[in-house]
Amino acid sequence: MSTFQTLTWLREKRSLRLLDQRRLPTEEFFLECRDLQQVAEAIKTLTVRGAPAIGVAAAYGVVIGIQEAVAAGNSINAQTLADIIEKLAATRPTAINLFWALERMKKAGEKSLKNDFDKDDLRDLLLAEADRIYAEDDQAHHQLGEFGIQLIPAGARILTHCNAGALACAEYGTALGVMRAAQAAGKNIKVYADETRPLLQGSRLTTWELLKEKIPVTLICDNMAAHCMAKGMIDLVIVGADRIAANGDTANKIGTYSVALAAKAHNLPFYVAAPTSTIDFSLADGAAIPIEERDPDEVRFFGEKRTAPAEVAVYNPAFDITPATLINAIITEKGIFTPNQLSGVR
Ligand code: MRU
Image (cartoon, rainbow, N blue to C red; front, side, top):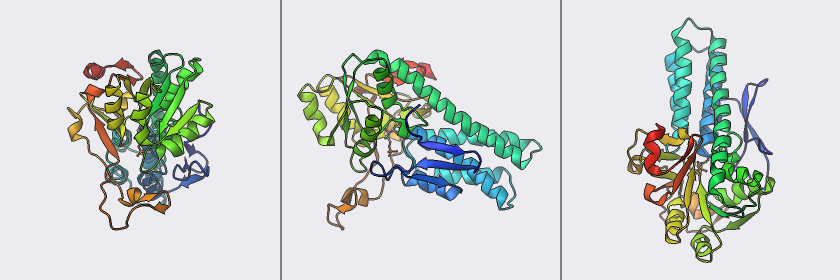
């Protein structure tokens, strides 16, 4: 368990409490979501972010949506559930975990709707499924962390991009889960965290999280990664993933692809750590992974300060695709696989 709580279901209040990641690292503020709109907004605005955490938040969002419909006296049927799920699915397109979790909630809900159902039973059933998604997420990340240890030499200097930690998951983290496990195993690792423009998940979140965990971390700007590799300061790279295609092509935070290219050029291993729920076997390769484009002002501004002319054209993709050929291994809760072994995981 980490020293902070990214998402918490408040049982008495029947609401979802989120550590507001927009305000980190300067403020530890918790946002309580009581209605569906708040949960959808929280996912869209990156109050809660990171592929697994988005899935878990959406699962509780379905529970909240049903509670809201019941409280409003609306009729509860398959269409009510479908409308709630549609609203949550429309928040962010890239992370498959969102759709994976919503599919599970849909199946759980429909099963109970088929029978002669009681509204409270439906709500309890959905809550039980959301709790299971949370618990399985946490368990999978602990397991992948344990598998990942074998890839980490003692004293390893590890570069990571964006935040794939407990802030991005239920509790433990994927890329940072491997680092947590390696540290607990006495490997004395040192982490280099890319800043991760434009929204600075690396500098705002990864450094905050690693400092809390007492794992040594050094912050670098994104454009320093290749330089650090050339200087012999990095031994390996580990990143998370938002969606992995059947051939191993991986969507992750924009800039991951350049890190992978630089790692290849310097003959450094490049690992992706992700639960198997992140693998989208319906897509043969990364070309079909939808890439979210976000508000141009995220690039025109650096935090609160505008750093570009207000009228300048901007291209702001939130993710890129790292081809499987640049990935040495994918660390999952079921073991470590090369991209071309992934079909066996299915
Ligand atoms: O836009 P974000 O902050 O949600 O992007 C997050 C990432 O790209 C993470 O690396 C990815 O979701 C893996 S999280 C375990």
